[in-house]
View (cartoon, rainbow, N blue to C red):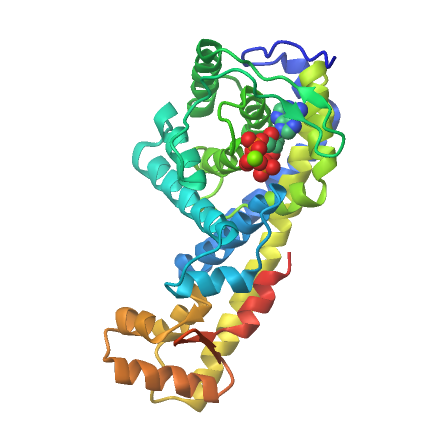
Length: 357
Ligand SMILES: Nc1ncnc2c1ncn2[C@@H]1O[C@H](COP(=O)(O)OP(=O)(O)OP(=O)(O)O)[C@@H](O)[C@H]1O
Ligand SMILES: [Mg+2]
């Protein structure tokens, strides 16, 4: 037996989700996120940042599901056309799903049920859709014990989802959006509308919720590294809310995750900016003839670059593109690597920064 309550519709009682301790943590989390939003604007070329951070998030979020890949594998896969192992494919799908969701928010300013289905479908590449068959339960990975039974009937799932979307799209209370984010994330996971991919879809919804509420201009908050490092706590706290109406520890956890990961991303952005400036200086000084700002930016947008990318970005002949990359390698900014028949040029210092947290 695993007596969880029947899942209630939103919203929970205010006093359960807004304690003094939560308000204290909230101000730290809001400040960190605000700083992140500001700093992100100072990166000259937003594509540089988005590509890198989103890929990292895709990697970490998928790792929660035990889909383990390395940065190198991922970048190699993105730079070449070879066959991709399933694990790599799922991470790359995840990244694509973030971009699809983000574009939808930019375009419409809200999400519909079918958009959430699109996100989930993009990650898993299947058409299973919302659960129709009963039988899905959440088990403890290690013991196999059933820890939570989500709603089983399709009608109930749809009703809960529509209640979820009402709250996701328009704030229905005057709680902080970060507290609402935590509540919404719990609710989505507990509805557990899909057979699989609920965790990953839900973590994408978190990022999208921040953009709806204009707390970030680009999808760069990076919660999954924290969840990954504190995974059993994540499961434990979700489960407490399943069984009781004690929300506070769970909400504190999500707020803390926002603070910690905002700060990490701020640090990372600062390092990327520093490296970008340094790289520009070196290129200007040592290869003034071929130095072009767009070329250097490309090496940050695509840490694994190749001739094709340069041709496209700079609108030059293949021969020129190849010469540029070779020269840049000679002055120590890139390192070439053969993958199959292709040569890629790796911005190794950038990869080092991206790898850390
Ligand atoms: N007790 C619980 N109550 C509600 N949701 C839970 C509970 N335990 C785990 N979850 C959620 O279920 C997710 C796992 O569901 P599912 O396997 O469908 O998603 P996934 O994306 O494939 O996996 P993962 O989240 O492990 O990457 C977890 O990430 C978590 O968000
Ligand atoms: Mg799964």
